[in-house]
Image (cartoon, rainbow, N blue to C red):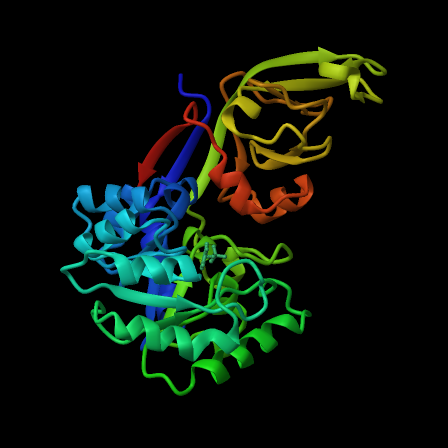
Length: 359
Ligand SMILES: *Cc1c(COP(=O)(O)O)cnc(C)c1O
């Protein structure tokens, strides 16, 4: 019997790309598929999104894997190349690269490049993680262009720090700074992540970078992807492997962290932190079974989770249990656990069977 299983709906993935594209049909949408497509399988995702204008990943190894699997679209390296040899590889493979610091500029100057390369200059507009300072911009553009190694005009990118927080003034400041700094340059511009696409239409510009939204998930923890017309892509299921009568005032599991106040039935499910389900999911975290929500009761262990099925439970061993997905929005589960959906999907381990459907 298959227990821990991530059912991935490739049709929903493709539909989501189209929904995001239609938010601004004249713009290009970059499908961000770093981290093995946020745990959804990057190769399968890229093969599914034949309509995608471009893909983006974080590491050159990820881009090389996509190429070796026959993916033909442009691939953007979001943090650029980390050494000169990688830049030479990127140019050869036709990857778009970012330049965010002086070392990468130096690598471009020194690199032995025969195929012109597409460069996106990354500007720090307030995230203060990567990117050149606004006052360095025109100097960088000049130096990059002077290398004569470019396939086209220098593009511009920046990244939001708070776009999922609709009350933060930071995002509009970042948009204004980005637009004013890049206004005089002809190259393409990209600023929006998923939150930018969904909430900040000023940030759409030429290319929008869709990560979490592509997987049907809303970056704002108080909403769901469904509310934005997106479809759930991953459903995480497992099976009930035991149902045990349980007496009031008896604890369950490691550390006796939970004690039942009533006579009830405890369901034991084959899912644990060994599958990537967080160990710190607290008592009360929702799980969906047979049309209702039941609470996790007791600590998550490596291979099992216990839930309180209630005194009148009619569930049976072998029944399917959903941890997030079509019936239980991952945004709600993540909020309960005190994390974000990004971390939940990407941390599933290889013990979880991935099954692909198109419905
Ligand atoms: C990961 C990433 C994205 C996608 O962000 P989402 O919130 O998942 O849409 C966009 N741009 C950059 C630079 C990233 O690193």
